Image 1 (tube, helix red, strand yellow):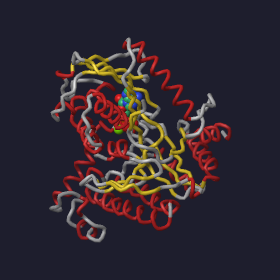
Image 2 (cartoon, protein in one colour):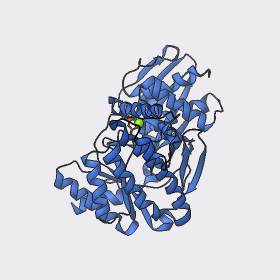
Image 3 (tube, protein in one colour):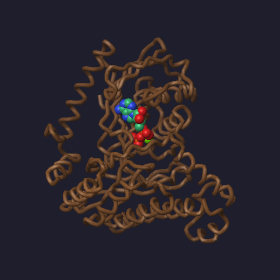
Image 4 (cartoon, helix red, strand yellow):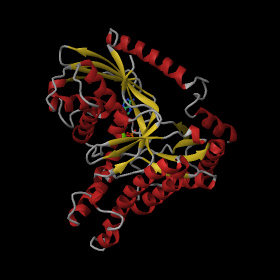
Length: 410
Ligand code: ADP
Ligand code: MG
């Protein structure tokens, strides 16, 4: 147990278990392999490679679709889109994660719901661009990713943003990052059918290295808040519980609908317009089933604002208690946690983490734990041990450092 855990922790963001590759050498090795796969599949070289990262959200869960605030960072793991324009209106899609499959589509015939499986995500972006009036045609695309899928790290937004950025570059559209993020969100909402908010796509497009992104989901205004974890002697662990969520299964949509119903009953444009001070009065006017939802959203928005203030005033360690408070709210009020995420968060805190919470849409996925770097291995080991004792799958452990958003790589 000790061996596995410490290997997992050392592995996290620094070396690749089993190969001993550093992240940088692994990225090169993976990139080179993908370039060869592209040539083999399509018979020519790509025109370029565009990358867009996954994210972890520090605080502000289920607030974006309530017009509220979020505070994500981009992670080093990214989706890379190797791409080349085609002049015949054909979109060919492949992914190194789905070896041997090339999905061929006619861009003019793309329709919401019309593309099954993983190819819906990249096809959706091309559809969204064309629906918005951008004159884009076909392409040969190969996706290559080290963002784990379904782990709450937003591989779907990373994929969409990589394709959106690639198309922007290939077709010289010159669209802004926020515009591409909105198109990617529309792609996921309307074409794939997942009613996600705007956080994931904005984080993937806009985040900067060394900073958290304070985003106002109502007007998309952003502030890059410096976050020097290493300088503060801290590590942000990502504990992937390996419990796969399925946000398309209706639970997320039901929560979102509940929030919108509550805002309507209160006569507000969105729950963002309710303050913590106004909460007690408002809760008395709501049916019992909506009370905990509203309490979570309103206190969570407040936690984002407090987190930014604390970060700027006292530094990253001050985020700890706010993370733990946020987890309790997701567990007890919003009810999007599950036994595995609860165990990971509680064990991390008991083992000395400054704070821990589930991150992402919920029903599984990943937990983040803010720890003093010298305690990181012990905390990861405690969580791995607790999972083994509970009979759960071994969690995957990463270290998250605030990384840059979408960019052209070559
Ligand atoms: P999350 O965004 O939290 O990772 P989602 O369920 O929203 O989880 O998105 C995961 C889906 O995105 C996968 O089921 C798959 O369809 C698609 N996907 C993500 N990464 C890749 C990839 N590298 N290649 C192909 N499809 C991918
Ligand atoms: Mg997703």
